[in-house]
Length: 270
Image (cartoon, rainbow, N blue to C red; front, top):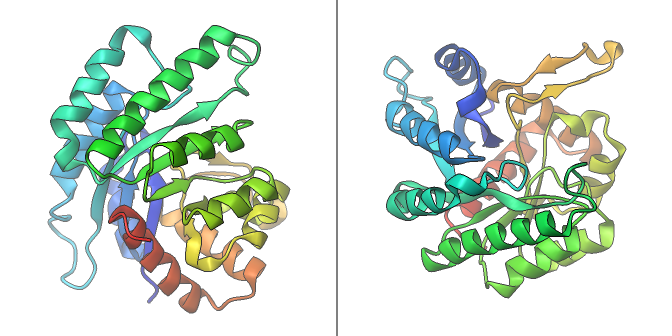
């Protein structure tokens, strides 16, 4: 049986989490990285790691889900009134975190596109969190749309050793620079049908690729592919299937390398 690591999920938003994790464990999911988007999510995901990270009480001896933790403020979830409390929470609990994330820049939101003040706010929040990652030598999970080049330049400016540009769908030239910098890109179930994701991952070496679900995102699969579904960590196997078909690599072989990459990323190894 293939075991897989889901390198990016929002467990704080997953409904019936206990059931979802047990189903995922039975499907072969061995670990999940729970990323955060705001202060509420950070608090909840820390609780989840403490509750389930030991691991599930009734799981088998050979397969038990491990929960990894990401602490961070997403560029689309910035709440000015709680930023200082968010930074303080990150500082106080950083030793329980495996990564800083999900953080980054995203100027594609309608309320951000032409608002220079929002651009400045996102940049400030991003840099504050990169300072924390640098201080504690933590890997970072990057969210970026339309700001790929700036995000990469900022991550490199801070000397971050390990970074994953999650659900990468940006230009190939920036992707090549990400790869040259020793960082990772990831893809999820959308790899089965998204031209942008397929184009990017087709150019990314497997040694610097991760797979994920971004649970509980809804994936609008075509009817001929089974129809749409709201992802849980078990759907990382859909990402593996799409990846294996795109790259023409046996699923077992791909899973071995992709899992190894996820562990190396979260340990800050290149």
